[in-house]
Image (cartoon, rainbow, N blue to C red; front, side, top):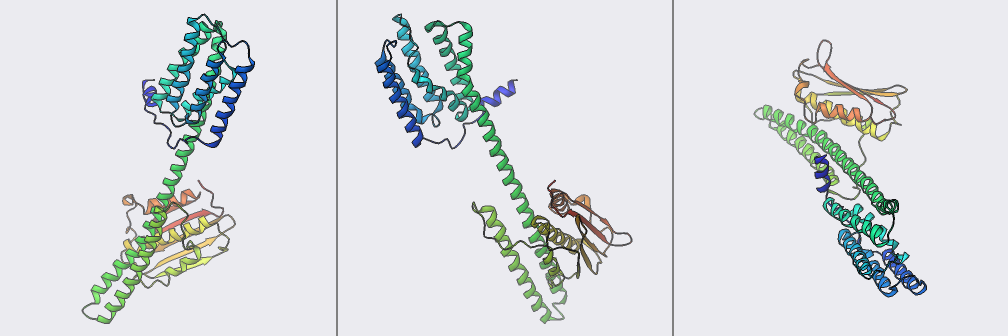
Length: 383
């Protein structure tokens, strides 16, 4: 209970509360006009000019109720307390002007926009006033006083409900943004890791032949330059997406059809054989892009870790309900330690498959090599 109270009191005010807008000014004008007309027509109000001036002053504060909710509430209810105290001292009883009912929006504004401490202070401030006016000044019974308190607190309850709903929406949007950024970070890792692995392999190959074949070194440097330029372009595209508030002008997302480019990739020392089977043209964009990224990451892992491997085989095939990606190599069967893959590698691949309602299995092949097997539903159903 104590933690709940401390958490409530520590609640900050809602950011971005709007200031006076045109409909606020129109509402204030309607309230003031109603108060003047009511003061002129009613005969049971002992001080019609005073009450009209009171309602007018409260109405002029109304447009600022969201920016300064506590101050506006204290001023409005404080003026009521002052006038009713004067009336009580003069043995004068009056319900005041009916047009003053608009002050019921102030408890709503307080709970909707103010901080936790201000809400607590404001409610503690107005409740004794409401009970004093009901029981002492207007001589109502206890039941009527309780009913009036419920009416007074109802707008506050509505404000609390709307505040909670809006806060939940903001948090959901923040979570969506966070997940999107995590996915983009994974995209950045997948793309850059592939090219950087190729660059490292080419650099090692260039060092090996530098003394005996200088011409091969020149060609190796050209390959490294191409891979580095591609890496830089993709990094700038993804980082630009992370930093932009607007929709980024991105190149088309790579998909299954682009997996064949790995077979023609002259940047990698480890040959890649790609085979596509089945109807792959109508896959959802999410599944299409995920298959490309999963294949890219699997090939990158093989190039990094497949000791004594001579080839990598990539197979994409479909049936009526699912699409299967299999990436295997013929290297040492223990080339990849899955228990150490705690980063964006194998764990990231499994998470990507899970988000699309699929599965990923990785482990040694029977006999020799390593295999990654991914199955995704064709519908791209999110888990």
